[in-house]
Length: 118
Image 1 (cartoon, helix red, strand yellow):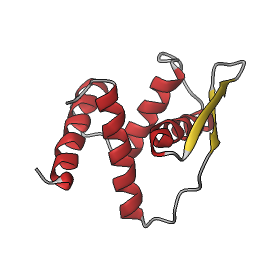
Image 2 (tube, helix red, strand yellow; image 1 turned 90 degrees about the vertical axis):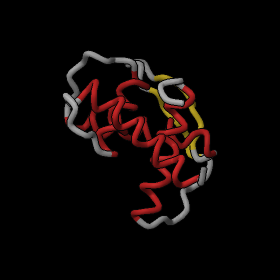
Image 3 (cartoon, one colour; image 1 turned 180 degrees about the vertical axis):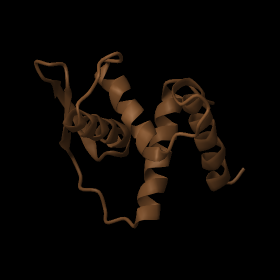
Image 4 (tube, rainbow, N blue to C red; image 1 turned 60 degrees about the vertical axis):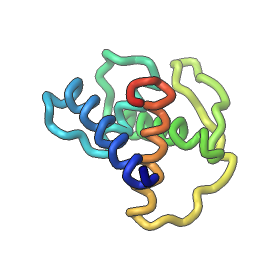
């Protein structure tokens, strides 16, 4: 199977899995999935978050998702339990479509590691 086709199938599996659990079957978009990864990584699953905290959750998710690609490295948890990452390598300039593909690859890898999809 071609790499692109495999990514497409795995991405659809992630979207279907998360949409069925968190969106009453409506299809979640990329940003919503990044947000959910941030909530998972923070571990405060039942907390209501303020707008600035939601932005920070998405940042946590992006750092965690791109960590295996060598862009970020986990540093520490602060007193409130929020993870902090340091930049190892700047992301290359990417077009919007390329950013989307990179994030989808990272999300698929994340859910493969968590054994949510195969």
